[in-house]
Image 1 (tube, rainbow, N blue to C red):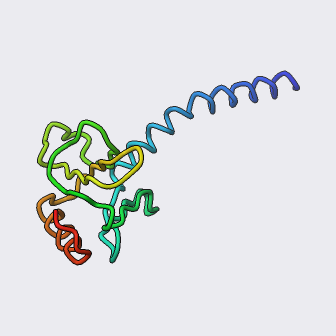
Image 2 (spheres, rainbow, N blue to C red):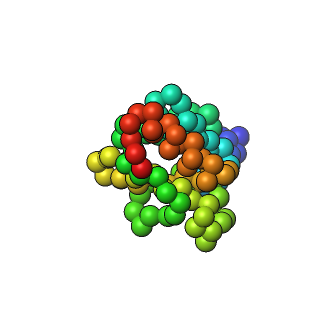
Length: 126
């Protein structure tokens, strides 16, 4: 009986070890569909699964434009449309390591227009 239990424990141990990469990939792919961008009173908030993972205060934003930078943080929902450069909005901001954040809002032109309106309130001309 002990051998059977040991074999079951070994099998479960191998099963869970093998499933960790699969679960990680599923979570990563699911997060692409749950990314939301919120323009609050004082910052752009990027949320995944409803949790705020990135906050860009308007006072730190330098420029906003359509396009994809060579280097920066990527919070994109449209990974299957990577060739469509008009889907990406790049926000150039003050930062330490990453100074570009790329997002993919539903309507990039409208998002940029609304963000620039909020930046004007803070006296930031882009």
